[in-house]
Length: 505
Image 1 (cartoon, one colour):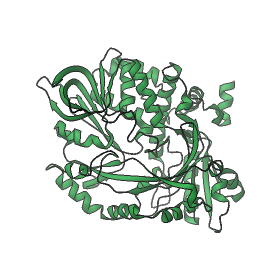
Image 2 (spheres, rainbow, N blue to C red; image 1 turned 30 degrees about the horizontal axis):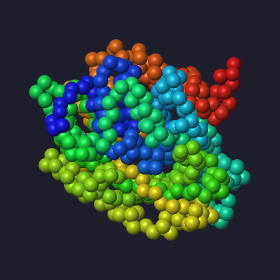
Image 3 (tube, rainbow, N blue to C red; image 1 turned 180 degrees about the vertical axis):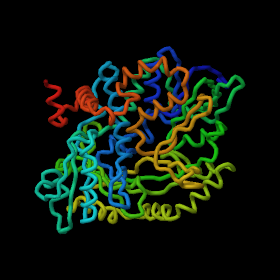
Image 4 (cartoon, rainbow, N blue to C red; image 1 turned 60 degrees about the vertical axis):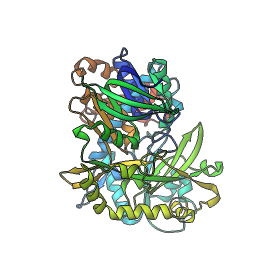
């Protein structure tokens, strides 16, 4: 079985949430297209999308303080929170469509209602949180948000965090009940099961070694299975959705758009509590404020999570550094990603981010006791024997030259890089990632299939009713969408009263 060659319409590299979402969208839009998936591990959703590797569990910007920036004049800029919330609403609509079309059987397998909260300590932070609350709660996307600095009220909301607190430091929190906990590992596996039933050819334990442009403009992939056999596969369109592994494949494609881009790997560690007595005392996703000098991906949070139908508590993430681009990657990933075209970009980023590198290395060196000290800022009575460490997935932040930041600017976000003719696209970057997968994959479709968009738009709008519409400019749609998605996804009991009344009438 040496160099068998097969031709197909679409190849997806990597069996994570991004490929799962893109594959599912394309199968709905053009069922006759042939799709192949290559994944080097033995199952779907094993790397960044995996529930144990992934902190992002329904980012709707309801509680993440790093999406609402405090301006020098003290005002709070909520534009980023609005953007992320609108993108998350697209995911909710698409999942609802899949449930309503019976393509997903039980939404409880991947999504649960859960209050989202922000909590801060100290007079200055409390004042900021109040201003943030005022800015968000007057916005229809964030209706139902509450603020409190009353210890009795907070004791009701977050007993585990409030009780046994010795200090008299000011403390406040906001709470919104329409939040969710999303298990993206489970969702990825559900979507790949569905794709398999649609005759999508999914090959596990298959690594893509190389990508070359063929004479007719299609792409030829050299694929190796775990037995070492090499096959050649060509496709008209290739999507590189291999998490941290995408950068190397993008470089191998040789497209000019992939030049001058580097990657900076960041690892993470969570603490997990499996003592049911402790777990039962907390029911929310609670985000704090990042320490001064800490990168945005290490905002401390204490999350209730539903994994394998079991409730557990996760605290973290503690950032760290490893040169690998994937959890299952190689120690040479970072070094081999440096090429002549991105050398200056990478060196500039290194010089600019010495303090970040130092911070990450310090984080790696933390003892369990030191991590417990940070946890006790959230749970004063936390006992070391109730908590264990879990190594999270690798995130590769994009480094590129930007007008605003100059050479070698570290980007905290998700980026789609595509060829001018739309025949190949790669997804790079990290947070808010999975939560905005539907929005990001619709962008890929728009960039790569401009000539089909007109014909596809009615179907896209059937799946995602507010596609191309600003929810903020159409506030009457917000209630409708919140109500219909909550109903489809089994989240109705968590809706604010106003919306529930609307559904009843």
